[in-house]
Length: 513
Image (cartoon, rainbow, N blue to C red; front, side, top):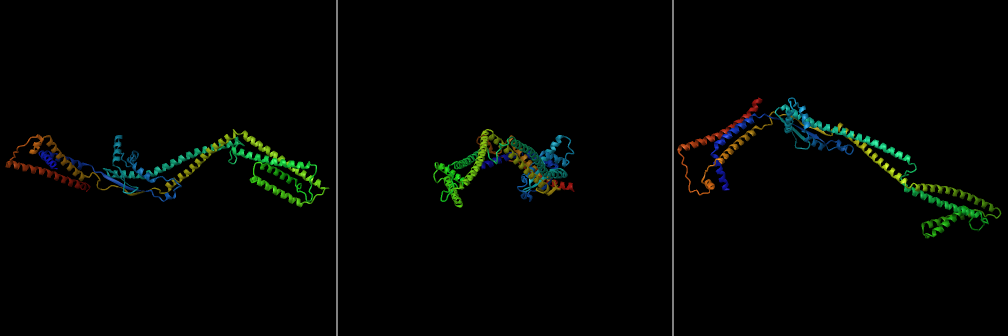
C-alpha cells in the first residue's frame, strides 16, 4: 500500500511541473464547453397520459357466444408498434411538419428525429400509457403528441373493424363454397339412389344383414310349408282309409277335429326327430311336449262337448269335415309354396348380386360420409359467422375497450432539455480532468527525477547522497507569486463556473419576461 501511495505522489509531483499547461487547457475547454451549452436550443416536452379500460361488463356476458380476442395483448402490441414508419408519416402530415420539407433526405431526417424523440412508456400500472415528445417549438411538440394520441385511440378501433370485416368476408366466401359443395353432394346422393333402386341399404342394414334376413325368412317358410304338407297328407290318408273314423261313446278322442289331429301328429313326428339330437331337457323338446299336451287337452274337451255319432248318418258328417279341412290345408300349402318361391327368388337374387351390391353400399357410404362432412362444416361456418356478427355488433354498439385520456397533451412553460446546470457542471469536471490529463501526459513525455528513490529505481545504482536546493529570497518570492497566480487561475475558473450558472438561471427569465 505504501508503494502505491508513493507512486501516486511521484506522479503528482511530476505533473505539478506542467500545471500551467493543464490550467490553460482547463480554461479553454471550460469556456468552449460553457459557450456551447449556453447556445444549445431549448427543447420543450409535450406529454399525455391515456388509460385503456378493457374490463367491460359485456365480456363475461357474451362469453361462449361471441368471439372475444385478447384485448390486452392487442393494446400492448399496438403501443409498441405506434412509432412504426407508416404511423410516423401520418404523424408528420397530421402535425403539419411536412410544410417545410422539400427533399426526400429532409423527410428521412425528420422521421429519424421523430423516432428518437418519441417515447411511449407505462405509467406505473396496467394499460396506463404516457406519450411524450420533445421539440424546439412547443406547438409542434403538442401537435405531435396529439397526433400520436389520435392514432393510438382510433388505430385500435379501426384495426378491430378491419379485422371484423375481413373475418366476415372470409366466412361468407367459405360458406358460399361449402354451400355449393353441399348441393353437389346432395345431388350426387339423389342420383346414386335413382341409379341403384333396389340395391340400397334398408333401415341401416348392409348386404350381408339383408341376405341373412332373407335366408332366415326362407327357412321359416320352408318349415311352415313342411308342416302344412304333412297335415294335408294326414287328412288325405284318413279320407282314403277303408273305414271312416267316427266318434263313439267311450272311444278314443281322435277324429273329432281332423285338423287338430294332423297338427298333433306333425308335432309328434317333429318331437321324434328332435329326440334323435337333443335330450328331454332341451328347451325345444319341452316346448313341443307342452304344445302337444295342450292340443290333446283341447281335443278331449271337444270330444266331451259332442254327442256320440250314430252309425247311420255320422259317416257323411265326418267325411264333409275332412274334405273341408283338406281344402283348407291345400290352400295353405299353395300359399306357403308361393311364399317359399318368393323368398327363394329373393335369396338367389341377393346371392347373384354378391359382387355388385357391396360395392354399391361402399360407394353410397362414401357419398353419405362426404355429405355429412360438408354439412357439418357448413353448419359450423354458419354458427361462426353469427358469432363474428355478434362480436362486431358488440364492438360497434358497446364500449368493450374504453380509452380515457387522463392528461391531455400539454407543454410546460420551462424547457425540458437541455439540463444546463448539469451540463455546466459536467463541462467543469471534464475541463479539470482534461487539464490534469495533459499535465500527466507531458510529465510522462518529458520525465524528471523528483526524488532519490526514483533515481535509484530507474538507474538501479545506489544513491550515495542528495544535494538540497537552497532557494534565495527572490526565488522563494517568485515561487509564492507563481503559487498565488495558479491558485488565482483555479479560483477564476470556479468563479467563471459560478457566473455561468447565474447566467443560465437568469437568461430564461429575462427572455420570458
